[in-house]
Image (cartoon, rainbow, N blue to C red; front, side, top):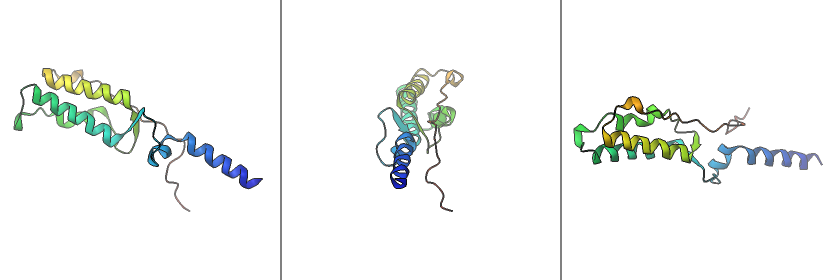
Length: 121
């Protein structure tokens, strides 16, 4: 009976913790890892700068620091729709040559119920 209770609690903890599910490959389609989000935003920013007539050494610094302005932690998980919205903003700002003061992307990390992996005592 006790073993069954322990297994039940363990299953509930694993299923309710998004970071664990993402780590083992069962991520929900609505989430994206921070390093992927970073690459998506930087890629769109560079494409916008290139299409906006910038190339080589003339690429705006914004295209290289867009992920820092968005506050991305490479180890965290974020909502895919919010990341895509930020990436589109980065593309438009670089495409039009707008001032980076208009870039208001501030992504929020998914909450964790437990820190994983659990340190062994």
